[in-house]
Image 1 (cartoon, helix red, strand yellow):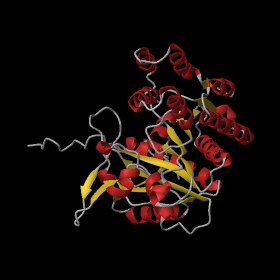
Image 2 (spheres, rainbow, N blue to C red):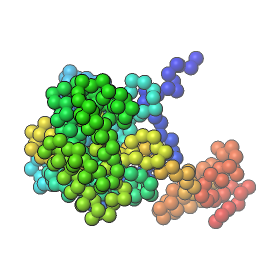
Image 3 (cartoon, helix red, strand yellow):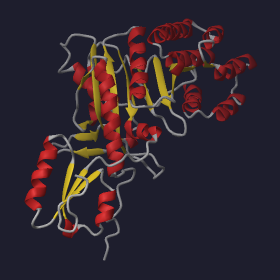
Image 4 (cartoon, rainbow, N blue to C red):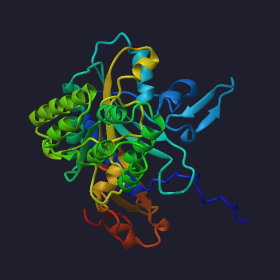
Length: 394
């Protein structure tokens, strides 16, 4: 009798089959090479962290955390992102290092799913953290590196949408005062990009028509550098003006990097990561249907680990990047050597010689091959040392 869950996987988990595994490895290598070329150093952190430290500051909803207990009774979490663990390391083992720190990572993160809606509970992130530089040059470097990293993989059709969380929050605060519930509600609509719901919510607000019109105008602040003037005229306080000035300065540096054609500005942009404090951005590719990458400035996260330092960074969702690349299955580059009892030693010698030259070689006894022609078709090249086959392709 077959067990009910014999072929099932936990909710949100996926198997990575050989072709997709190879494509992930290829994309990972290309991303890593681009990141290394900018002077970043890769590091890793444990899969498990304490809930009361990394778990609480990760900005991941509590119900999305995988929790478990260690033998001492401490609550642990499978790391839900890479930024919080690296902040912990920067504030402890690297606190006496020379700043700014340029760190990079590659590894799986875990976020529990409540329903099987196509969202993964485990996925791989490749990303960077630039710690200790509060300037627009740091923000521009991170975004420019993200663009160059994606291009390095062969992806050229994508857009990086850039916003400023300070503008939105200051704008809402000026118009709505201390009405935190309404502000949170409107922020939720913007995060979900539910602009119809946003407009409907405005109709029922007990505020003046002028304020409603200003809140509606916020939705139009999307596009190129031309939105800077519109956003300045709509700005209601000094904090809004400062955010616009930071975006203008960022754009000026991005133009010097030569990546401005990949940049789109959106002052409605909101992230689910609530530790972002300034510039934030998201990356999209056509036909992907989900976020490809994201990042931004998080100047309050490191102080929560008692390190007074600013930081910015990005994370690329590796599996989604492979989907965006949409590469066809590549030709198998393995070489096959078919042997029988009499030719096994000869075939092994040939295999070892080819392996020393850097080839991937599959040594297979003919008795275990159901269809020799199909076996040869699936390989780049074959040598048949059996009496029936002679020496093919040699």
